[in-house]
Image 1 (cartoon, rainbow, N blue to C red):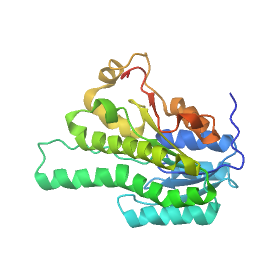
Image 2 (spheres, rainbow, N blue to C red):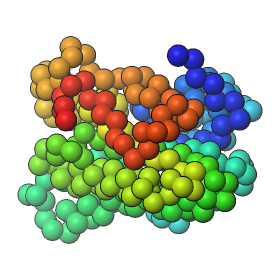
Image 3 (cartoon, rainbow, N blue to C red):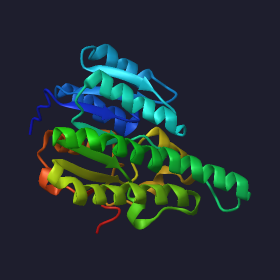
Image 4 (tube, rainbow, N blue to C red):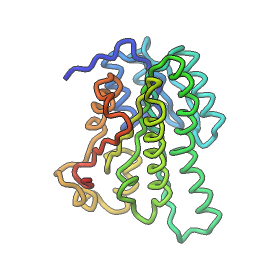
Length: 252
């Protein structure tokens, strides 16, 4: 099914690589205008800016700094005037074993929560009045399988942050649907991204593949079409739901 997103304005966090880059690429191919966020490396978003100069604006922000998160939102409103879709994809997955000293463990926990949960929730908070004024808007949180089945002992904070991303989506969907706002979460399983490479390096690819029902790891391009469908309005009556894309590694 070909999806057309002309006249659709999207703000997308964590767009430089992985799921964010694949999503941005598909949305732009479909005609959307996008504000693309990145943190350190801009090679991916620079490529998209060069390829789609009239459809792309880019913005750097460290979401561990919530003032920068607000700056990103304000820039997005200024550039687009009307936002149709907010996609919270930016995240981090710091290994944070309980053997660490308390201060380091707490510092890591706070950083994970700031980047994964608090910044995405803040962007939702900032977006809601905008969407209410327009009586239209879609919010998509990229969560994780870990929100439902848990994760390894190194990633307790990561799993907790992703569970929070799912919970806020359900609350927004239930409370703001009559205002024209739809909200969704997507829970990928292990996906071949730079972030996931840390686990591959530690546990080995065979360990990861053994955990799924299919023969190949999920790729970012396998997730992007579902996000594009939601952006198009083709899944509006699924508001409040979570979509599992985990290669059969966690079936509910």
